[in-house]
Image 1 (tube, rainbow, N blue to C red):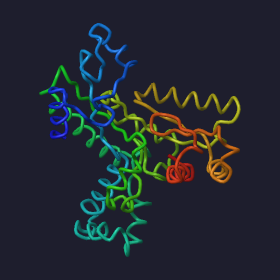
Image 2: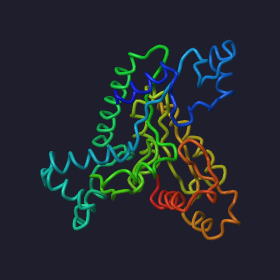
Image 3: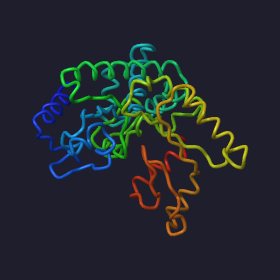
Image 4: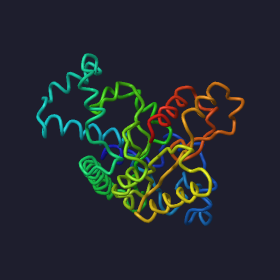
Length: 299
């Protein structure tokens, strides 16, 4: 964390940052016009024209991190049903030959997004450390460059997963991780209110870079005026409880399957992609499969 912050801080200070969309020929005119001092200096925000340079420090794969810590803690230290080495052996084997253990991890261990204090407290501890360490290492570069903590993956959750081995929550090596601050696929089995209750515990007011929880609901749950009223109440509750960001995709698995079979008939279908909406039929097959997996399992 410190190495990353210092690397970006030095590059910004020396005017040599050549990273991602912040390369030598990248500009953001609209953002520059909206930032303080941008119009006065007539310099682009990506070229030092704003009063402050703001950089987000991003925690990724939150749901899997919480589930992995919870499973490891409970199996190895609380229940003492296995040793650390036995768990490591299962991960090195990518769960092959450990099917029974994997099913136990998947179905019986505490999971974030169920209003489960065991898992949610682990999530809070992870985020508390992450937020505090980010602020500590960022002090050196303030106020010219401000580093703000966030939890997110954008649409990278698939590529992030490619780089990771098996994890203690039962995930296979190279499988996609969960998006943003969202639950592990199929883990939010207690319904939308419980998922929201877990999300609002996670220091949302201290994550100014954003911490979206991406949730999915069946279309049947929001039919007619009563369904609309139910959706409004859900969103209002999230805001009243101090939630940071929430995205909702309202669809069902059969609609997604139909769109995969006959895309020309479903070009209007849109789904949430970690902060923005995408046309489902324009996504790659792997991304479509992940959306379908969410629809089947929830979350």
